[in-house]
Structure formats: structure tokens, C-alpha cells
Length: 426
Ligand code: ADP
Image 1 (cartoon, helix red, strand yellow):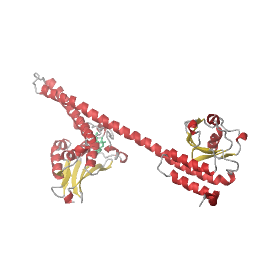
Image 2 (cartoon, helix red, strand yellow; image 1 turned 30 degrees about the vertical axis):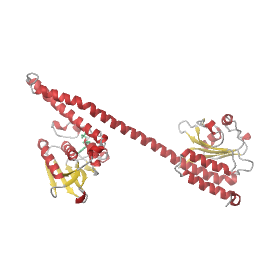
Image 3 (cartoon, protein in one colour; image 1 turned 135 degrees about the horizontal axis):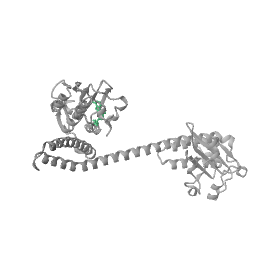
Image 4 (tube, helix red, strand yellow; image 1 turned 90 degrees about the vertical axis):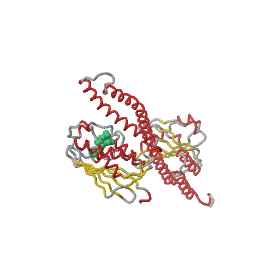
């Protein structure tokens, strides 16, 4: 159908359809809005149009998108708060139709002075969505009879609604992108810091350890009883420092060389659990905690990196010991599933508040210093770095498994993780 036969109403409808397709396209948003303005401008044979964006803090209105030969001159130009016809429209939330600007006291003449154009007539509509004022839309200089406010108002208001909705979406998307980018940068900074710290801590920690050994062995001269006491205190500090260096190094290596951490071997989870329960036997004894290990069958094979899976279970077991009072119970259960094996470590410890349960798997996150958690008296209770569970989660993720916690404050916690079984067994 040609446009003459289609009639003006038909062309309005088609313009709205075109605009809606345009606004939903994936092109750069400002270009899209300008194309939408141009199609409406053509409909009224108008000379120019613009979309203004309201700055909520200053109240000023800046040109977001505009058309016409002079658009370069107005780039970045702002109309101060409450000035001009746009200022009035935004303040009142009402459209304003000005068929003859010579009789319009509100016209902000600075814009005409900049462009060298003369604004003869204009219509300005507010851009509002979900009750929020976003800015305004303006069309100017149509030929006599080109725009009839009474007749064309429904079209113009629909058009303004379309622009407002699309603008709202674009602004939201932009806000989310900025937030996402700054989170990504923060995460990168954290990884960089961890990598540097692990590198810088390792050498002095090794040096201190070996000089301590030299002194303690008497190779550097006889050790008096007082000196021996001091050396024992130093040994505790060195052991703690080494644990810190190990944790930081583990997480750095999991971050920076995930390819070298690919799981490869078949391992028996029952054997790993038995080995750890025996390795930590002295700690359970010191706290008079009762530990049990249950499994339906043995061996219980999974595919993984033995040192890493052992590290996961060790971190969880050590936490269970730390956060369970003397005389409490700790149970390890190994359950086979169709495609994976699940390990659950259950304790009768202090428990973890619901709102903290996801966060404890984040790096450097601790609910509170361990000293505040426990009634135990053993020196082993001193706090960690908040890295143990972050390391465990990263390792389990690299293995294609899952890790989670169920817990109730004052009752206890169950930490569970899964590791995939060898393919031919599933
Ligand atoms: P850290 O080595 O500092 O303890 P983790 O990442 O291992 O760091 O643990 C993070 C926090 O999760 C702990 O500080 C503690 O608050 C909580 N948590 C971990 N395991 C338990 C548990 N079995 N019972 C109660 N709280 C726990």
C-alpha cells in the first residue's frame, strides 16, 4: 500500500510499529532512539526533535538524543533546572503544545542562539515510566497544518510512552553493567593480591622456619631453658604462619592455574576419610570429641585429585573440631549416588545462622573470631583466615561437584560435598 492511499492514521500506526521494532533491536541505544525520532519527524515533516534526560541530582536536562543538521552543536549541552519549556514539562509532568513561540514566555532562547535556528512551533511531552520522571521529548518546526494537537495527541503520547519504557530499560541495563564491572574489577584485585601475597610470604616463612630449626637443634650454640621456652612459642607462631601461607598459596594456584588442577585419578573416598580420621585423632582426643565414620561399601571410587579432595575433607573436619564444644560428636558419612559420591560431615557444634550460610564459602569470610565461638580451652582453637571453605568450594567446583551446608544455631552443622564417580560405574 502506498503512503497516500494508507492515510495519515495508517502511517501513524505503522510508525509506532516500526519504532517498537527499532527500540527492541540490539543496536546502540542512542542510535535507535535517534532513528525513532527521525521516523516521527518525517510523519509531521518537522525540522528537528530531541530526547532530554533528567539528572535527578541537579535537576538539569541534557540532550540525550537529537536529530537535525545542527545536532553536533548541542552535544553535551544542558538546560539548567526548571528552565525553558522542557523544564516546565518535567516539573509539571504535563505535555505542552506551542503552536507559535513568539507568544511563549517560557522558551529558552539560548538553544536557538547556539544552533542559529529559529524555533517557530514545538510540542514537548514528559517521559514517565512506573511513576518515575525520566526526561522529555520535543518535536519542533512543522509546516502549517503539519501537526494537529487535538488529533495527534494520542499518537504522540503513545510514542512518548514507547521511548520512556525503552529508556528505562536501557538505564537499568547500564546501571547493572556498571555494578557488574566494578564487582569484576574487585574480584580481580582480590585475586592479584592473593597471588602477590602468596609469593611474597613464602620465602620469608621458609627462612624463618629453617633458622628456627638451626637454633632449636643447638647447632648455633647451647640453648638455655628460657631460650627453649621462647623457641617453643616461636614454633607455634611459625606453624600458624605456615598454615596461612599454605591457604593463600592454595587459593592462588586454584585461581591462576586451574588447568593444572584438573582432576585425573581414581580415588577411594573411604580410604581418604579413614586416613584423615586417624591423622586428626590426637585433636579429637584433646577435645574429647567422639568421631564416627560410616560408609555403605568399600572402596567408594570417584575421579579426582587426591591431594585436593583430601584438603577439602581436612578443612571441613578441622572446622568441625574447632566449632564443636569439648565432648561433642562428629560424624562422617559416605553415601553412593547414581553418578556421584556424597560425603557429609555432621557436628553437634555451635551452628551457623541462616543468613551466613552462603557467605561462609566466600574468601576471607568468618562469622566471628573463633575465640568467641567455643567453650574449649585448647590452643588449637585460634582463628583461621576465612579461606578454608573458599578453597574447598573452588576445588569441588573444579571437580564438577557441589558443596553446601545445612545448619541450625545451637544444634550443629552438616557440611556435604559430592565428587563424580568414574564414568563406567555410573
Ligand atoms: P576459617 O579457616 O577462618 O575458619 P573457613 O572458610 O574454614 O575459615 O570458615 C569460615 C567460617 O565459617 C568460620 O569462621 C566459621 O564462622 C564458619 N564455620 C565453618 N565451619 C563451621 C562449623 N562446622 N560450625 C560452625 N561454624 C563453622
